[in-house]
Length: 90
Image 1 (cartoon, rainbow, N blue to C red):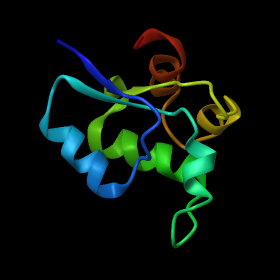
Image 2: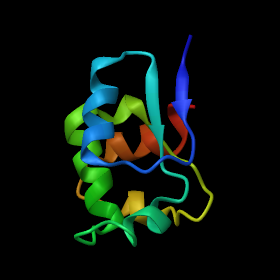
Image 3: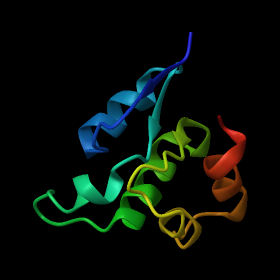
């Protein structure tokens, strides 16, 4: 069974916990909303880069709610990772 965490912020602790469990993935919905509330403030594209480095692109899914696709497309991650996140993982 696959589990997707919807609308949950991608804190460092949460990302690390997801790495341990093969069947749990992250989504990017409301990413900007959560990043604006982090202390210290974190840019959404940096969080995408961090998540891809820690858990890999197969566990990151694009959620469109309040997340501009440019956040993923402009992140410093491989093009293949962007393709997976934007449309191939779902």
